[in-house]
Image 1 (cartoon, rainbow, N blue to C red):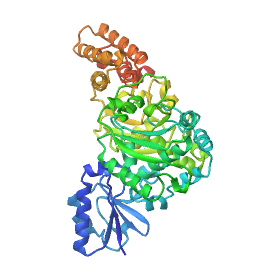
Image 2 (cartoon, rainbow, N blue to C red; image 1 turned 45 degrees about the vertical axis):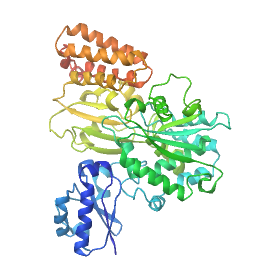
Image 3 (tube, rainbow, N blue to C red; image 1 turned 180 degrees about the vertical axis):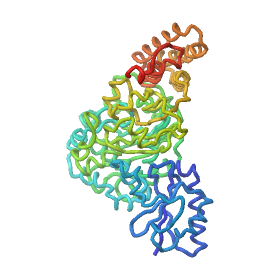
Image 4 (cartoon, one colour; image 1 turned 60 degrees about the vertical axis):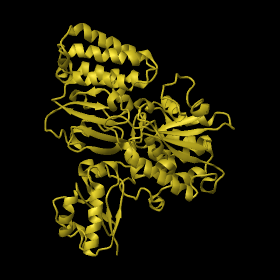
Length: 526
C-alpha cells in the first residue's frame, strides 16, 4: 500500500525549505524501499509550523512541523515510513492529528475548506471534495436567480470596500443584452500582512475558477481575467494548471459543462504597481496602459474593461460564491453579525507568536485575535498597536481591543477591516515613524493623477520629518491634520483617501510619540 505524505507547495512553505524537505523525504523512502506518494498540497495556514509535513494513515493525517531537511533522518528513524500507527511515533516535531490542532478546531472554514487538504492542481481531487457543486446548481438556475442568491447571502466585497457583491452583479446583469461583458478578478494583493489571496490561489485554484465561472453565467459575461501580481509566480503556475484542467474537462470553453453558457478565462500578470489594486487603475493596466486611476462615474459595472460592463471582485469574494450556490444563501448568511455576513479569512502577521490565516465568522473581537488566537507578541513585550487593513489601515491601541471584527464596528471607531490583514507591533514601535511611513508609502505608490494624493503625501512626509525633529511641533501637527483632511475628501481613490487613517489614528491614540501632551486612549478610559 502506497504511503501518502503531504508537503505544501505554498510559497511560505517553499520559502522555509519545503521543496528540499520533499526531495529529502523521497530519497529517504527510496533508500528504505518504501513506496510513497508525495502530495504537494496547499498550506493549512499555520505558518509558524511550515513546512508542515503530514503522514496519512487510514484517512487520518498526522503532522510534524516545522520540518527542515536535516530533520528528515530523525523522522525516518522515529518510524514515519513504517506501518505502525502514526500516533505512536514519538518525535519533538509531532503535532498529532492535524485536524484536531486547536488553531484549526476554532475556525469556521467555508472558503478555505479544501486548502491544505487536496492536491491543488488535481481536478479529480477537487471534485471528490465537493468541488463544482456550486456550478452544477447554478447551471440549473436562471441568471437572475443566481444574482439574487448571492445578494441574499449578504456577501460583501472582501477586497476592502465591503460593497455588496449582489448589487454589483445585478448592475452588470441589467445592462443591455448583446454587449460583451467581463468578469475581472482583482488578485493584485499588495497590502503588508496579507496573504489570503495567494494562499487560496496556490492551495485551491479551482475554487477561484469555479467562482468566476458562476459569476460569468450570472451576469452574462463570456470572458474572465485574473489580474495577478507579478510577485506571485507560484500562484500563476497553479492557476494556469487549473484553467487548463478545467478546459480539458469542459468546465471552461464554448459550452460550460455541456450548457449553453460560454466562459473563457485567462491569467494576466501585473507589473508591480500598488495602485493597480484600485479597480479602475487595474483596468487601465489590463488594457495595456499605465495604471492611472479613472474618475467615476462611469462605474466599471457600466463602462469597465474595454468600455464594456464589467464585474470586478476580489479573489476572496469570488471564492466565497461556490459555497453560497452549493449550500444556499441562508447557510452562508447564518454566520456573522449585523450587515457583515459569512466568514472572513483573517491574516495574522507582524510581531506575533502564531502568525497565519484564521477563517472565522464576523464578530470575533480584535483582542481575541491578537491575544488568544495569535498568542501575543513573539518578543514577549506588551502589544502597543495593531494595524488592521493593510498599510492604509488605522492603528488600534489595546483600549480598542473590544472592537468586534465587523465592517460597521470598525468604521464607528475610524478604522477599516480592508482585506483583513492584521499586523501587530510591540511597545518598541515609534508611532510617529509609522505615520511618516504612511505618507512615504503613499508618495511612492501614488499614480500621480490627483493633486491631494500626489502633493499631499509628499508634503506630509516632509512635515512629519519636522515634527520628529522637534521643529515647531504644534504648528506642524496642525498642518498634518489639514493635509489629512484634504487627502481624505479630495483624493480620486482610496490610496490618497485612506492614507489619513494610519496617520490620524497614530496621532490620536499615541500622542506621546509625537511630542504632544496627552494621554493614551486606554489611560483616558480608566
